[in-house]
Image (cartoon, rainbow, N blue to C red; front, top):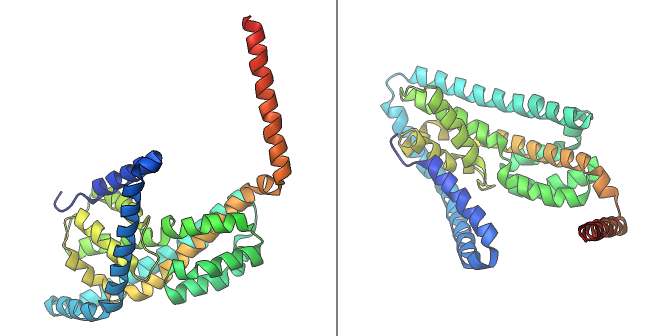
Length: 295
């Protein structure tokens, strides 16, 4: 396969991260280096996003000039846009609510109503990070989720649970490949799905960050990064739609965790200490019994 082995690079990165986590103090310097590098890249990405309209204008103009049949391009773009929106709608208003109902036996659409402020804020800002305070407030005040859950699960979810972004990137990659006449067999479709999911994990919670990670998927297919210009013109609107779905996924996930953790959350610290004390006593008794039996 032509291009950089992005999937292998992602797997190696995960392995390095897990190793750093296990080594802890021994790898502290390396961890600090990657944290600083992450901050630098996020700042550069922010600059690129702010300046991107200028570049996008010329990229789109270049692609339009090259197209011999403009009507076909417009129709294809319409189908692509509709596919992404319908896919996001099915995932956000059918798949996620079904999972929520199965695991909690509660009305998911009432839950969506309680989270409407966070969802509309996500659509307006196109940033899950900027929406995070609103999401936390809606879950705590409107739904009644314990703050120990919201303030742990939501920050993590806003970074790694970008299901809307993963769906968008997979559809966009297939669309660009079809526009370029690339034959996609089952193997390539599986690679696209895995790479899109992996690329969405850890994507920056800033507007149009998904367009940046799309480059990795295009490289996996052996397509030039410049092909992203085919979709960048309407990405500003799709970005808002997928961010709203990302926030919905984070909210549903936190609510499910809270539902499954009710017994643990209602236990007082004193009760937990007593439980651990009883468990320790039982363990000591068993060890003593084993020693007596062996003697």
